[in-house]
Length: 334
Image (cartoon, rainbow, N blue to C red):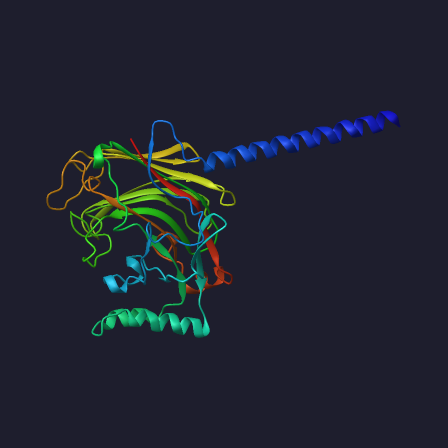
């Protein structure tokens, strides 16, 4: 009996020690994720989402369903209308939380009415596009507040990193991405120095869709749609845990990382089509990614990358709201 008790005590002690070890590892991982220091890199911009609201000095909302820009469904057959309401985006518990929702009844009617109020009086297509609005979400961007590119301020490399948590669901499409910086007066989404999308480029730091079991990194370039080109890299992920996603952007090369492990790259064509390029007027060897880009964070509902999930499928996913959580986002340079 004494022997059994002794072994029981030893086993319990071993379990307690193992549990303590796991707790210490998790604590170190959390501390590491909160530390912004990276050897050899200078932190030039960040948002830790430690406040009580979205920081208007860093972010602005991009509202609507794309109809105001002449691209209803944001050019991707998406179903959502982006709002600035707390029901769709909030800073809480040290995180930015973007929520996609299926709107019904009076709330759906209010959303459609608001959508039409933002259309010009003569734009019948814009108003018609509002009739089908039944989902809401949020899209934040740093346009006019922060933009960056290799070569700016003497930096040769840019590093964009974020710590994220996903909510799997058919028809959902969270993303952290970059678009060209353009004058505020220009009413064009995705336009830049070399012309309309995608001749001025798009960089996708991170995307995932549906089951969220793959991390995607992409660039879009070449000519204006529909003659544009793209390149995508991908890596399997566990959608149920937090991940750190990173893009390292140099003048002639980009690299994508997941939790510190490189999983893909893209290179400039150097003025040829053997890599990224721009067919826009005045393009150089590393165009279109030789201009400044701003950051966007959003969660779409439906769209081409989801397999053009129909409204019914998205509605089934969003019986309850689904969220895209961002613990922090940081930009470094060297």
